[in-house]
Length: 298
Image (cartoon, rainbow, N blue to C red; front, top):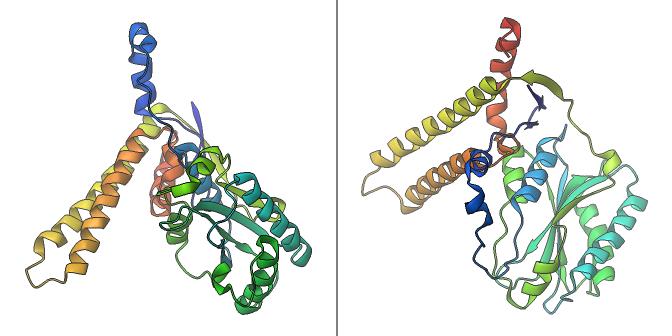
């Protein structure tokens, strides 16, 4: 039996990775074969990214704000200094907003490779976005040696409204280069996301089910079938387009189809595949689990 734990937007607790089955099937001789050497590349590991998605989907409420922290060109290439800068800001946030909570992500910026932070969270009190920006601009610029009035690009504050799925996709997007002169720093960076004032983070209530292998497999097949249906509908719309269709609309559909096909691949070959499910699938899975629980067929 497996323990499957569910929240409003998250499911965790089971490993159905095809790759694990393949590993078991490998012969001892194949396992001992030396791997070809490849040059190390910076990356936001799949496990770390999945854990970030879990953290975002495990929230009981939508964050109030999205903060962005930027550096000027020529920033220190020591990733320890980047984290020190964030820690200094965190101390100020805790002092100014004791009930606040935040989840941060660091990633390379644009074509420069220099670091910048995205932070989602809430102050724990009623806060005007512009007032928060003025406060943040002053503190962050002091920390990193920029001029608050001159370097207006240093920070940004957006009030979050609407789609939690869109926010999750934005904050947990895969890391891409180029890394430029910061390549070594990104290689040595240990943590690409984390929590600040974590004790205040509002976590959704979770429900656990004891399920068998067959139920897990059926759930996986159901989700894959749902995504394939969506792909079919999108491909139908794409096929119905004519020469007069706007180029932008065609590209949007093609990208959506590609994204869902990639989503299928991730679900099939990611061990903890439940952590990357879209929130739209949670209701489907809950119905199956409740139905089987009532019939004693979990």
